[in-house]
Length: 265
Image (tube, rainbow, N blue to C red):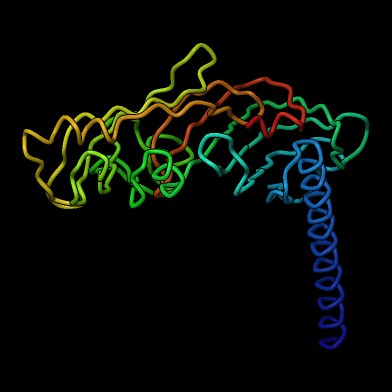
C-alpha cells in the first residue's frame, strides 16, 4: 500500500510539474512573439524585454486577456540626448482577433497604462556639458525602484540632487545642486530643469560656492531638454529621479494601444 501511495503521489507531482512547465513555456513563447512584434512595429534595433505577468498564463491566454505586461527597451536612439530607455506597464489588456499572441499590427484596449522615458546621468551630463554628473533623489527621499513618491519608485520633482563639476561656469570642484523638474511646452515634451540652490552636508559633495560664482554655477545646472515623448503618446503625470536616472512618467486609464507608438523618439 505504501509503495502504491508513493507511486500515486509521484504521478500527481509529475503531472503538476509538467503542467507548470507547459504553462511557463507558453508564456515564454508569447513574450518572445510580443518582443518581436514591438521591435518590428516600433523600429527598435533590438528586441525589448517583455514580461507577461500573472499565473497561470494559460487561463489568461484562453480568456484573450492579459493581466499585466511589462515592456522595456534600453539604449534606444534619441535625437536629443543620444540614448534613452523606454518602459511601459500595461494592465488588463484585451487581445482581439481571437489570438493569444500579439502581432505587430495589434490594437490593444488597455484598462490602465503607465509609460516612461528614462535618461541616465551619463547622457544627461553630456547634454548639459557636465560629464561627471550624478542624479539622485531629493535629500531624505528613497532613491530606488521600491521607494519614491510614485508606485514605480520615482521621487518628487522638487529638489532633485544633481552633483557634478560645472567647468563651463569656471568652477572646478564637484558641487551638489537642488534642481526642480517640470514638463512644459505646447505638447508637454520639454523637460525643464531649474537649479534652485547649492546643497551641502551629508549625502552631497559638501562644497560651498562663493557668492560671485553662485549665479554661473546655478545656470550651469539649469537647462531645457526637448523631445521627451512618452511611449504610446501618454501625457506626463510625474517626473523625478530613480536610482541615477531622470524619469518622466505618464499614467492613463481606458486607452487603446498600437505597438508602433511604443517608440516615439
